[in-house]
Image (cartoon, rainbow, N blue to C red):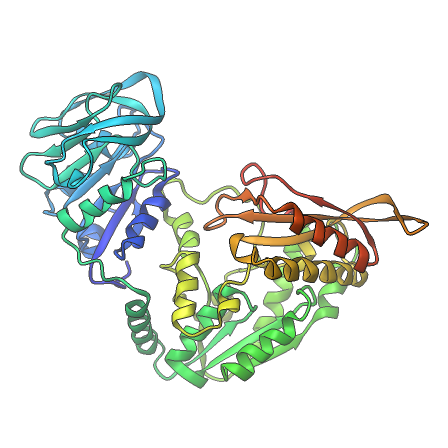
Length: 514
């Protein structure tokens, strides 16, 4: 486990859809935390040395034969513990209380009557609106516990051990539907766990710089640079640690946005004085993509092609023993969570390069969420427009062109994409959305331009709001902005005569079309 912070909260995951939200709320309070599977074992928990433990919710029934459990010894570690929803039901079950399946699943808002004398509810109103989401019901609190809150349908909605700092709540304080949920969590952190709340990006940077220097020693490091936030922040942080012993490799696959390749080189090679090797591989990628229309096939071609070129260039650099990658915490969580890896929705090009190159990995962002990586980038002095650049897929415009990929289609989409981004930035709406981009559809429609009939392609405009891309809502773009973009694209881009707006959220759709 990581030793990135002195004060740490451990979240044991039982498969709740809200587990990441718990981690976000804790970190927003400047307290470092990590999510691990519920069954990591006592030795690992002791090694982690948490100041507090949170048991997440989950979809299981605690009375089921194969329900996920923790050892009761977890409660004897002398560490404050908070069970949320399933975590509370598990606590109740382990201490001999009565947990039964409710006749009706309780889902939605409820009015909580709480004991404000309990540390967990210190400073709050006696009546609270909370969000319930559970199918089990606690009919009797466990021996040695006191009931400290109830609702009309849940007579035991929160409990506290009489002698140990162990709490349980039947509702979800981490969601926005529990208005004072953050205050409850902060009471647990600061009043019960007594942490200082001093985890900042500056302290994170200092600890990371020291650990990178210690790990790398006198060896060299290589990093794949794409111009995106994750690789940019990774490269800048590693460069701060090892200087010229870092070499970045930028593979221009010909699938980038307008001016992207030039911007990467000017930003990193010139402005940041990094060693950057640029590989012009547009023809190579286009040849391999010729005639390919299936999105998974496109990804399977682009990924290995990138890997082959990267490996060829990396092997030319002497004494390289480390590969730096911009892995983020959501990727790590997916591999260690109770739910396990999610179904394959799409194939990513970020393959196991470290294994192929026989290099050790340096993943300095693996403890951070996307917004935290951005905050780190700003702390490192990366320009604001680079740090807050909208995410761009690894396969580039190839998966924003539905159907086969050609140089002409790339030129059409690049120009349309540039207009979209220019108008979003001009209207100051760019910072309000997670991503905004165009998708070139393999659909033609009839139009009239001047006195001439046209029969050209349709462009779908996509804009979403999100915090981490795990879920997303389509953005309510002002009609004036939609009108301006549509008029400009149709008027300035030869090959497009119709613009439509995608109003699909995630789920059920994905953010990208392919």
